[in-house]
Length: 275
Image (cartoon, rainbow, N blue to C red):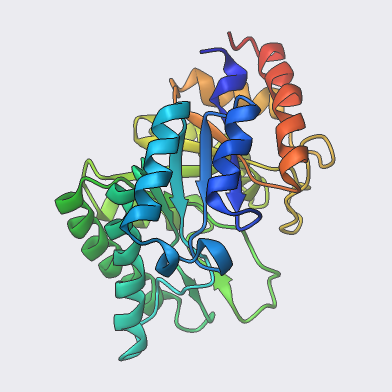
């Protein structure tokens, strides 16, 4: 597999999943992410027949499919009834995982309202522990993503954002089914930066590196690579030097923009000395 083949595309909710798989097959894309929350891709629209068709198409084309939960669902929820609904939501992704032949599920730590950060983190950790225990019974891999910052004066803030926040979760859950999804553009927004995350991370636990561009210590924008100031040559050099052999996932713009960017990123990786 050449390096470009390791770069996948996040369909998000841009296209019906079956059409996205066909599009990926035509364009030589081997890794896909999809969100199952809305419209024709809502998880409730997948009966056994439709799920079997998706699984067969992925097998036929050699595509690895990942599922990406919605960050608007607060994994750090602690209110009665709502809290139970969040558990059910996450379990539904695990339930459909084998039916679709999925290979990973990306999850988040939720969000807090500034004054209740500690309570929210504790609630999120306990929920993720329950989720991972359930995933173990289904053979599902759960990947925790590092999130983006919000403006300092915002009342709502995502979890986890800093490396230490992220570490709180992956140190608190020791399971072969609990892994990490490293989003480099989110790391670029915090003081540690990509370099700090790479230095501290055990890449033996990282299964995915997510890609978009942005501006250092700026705002969440998900630009095309080259439209911000993230140093992709340095990023690839650092990530690959830590022994990462997994896939990268483009998550910005349109499908065609993400497809075109694979060539740009492969060139940057070559400049970094990546074979």
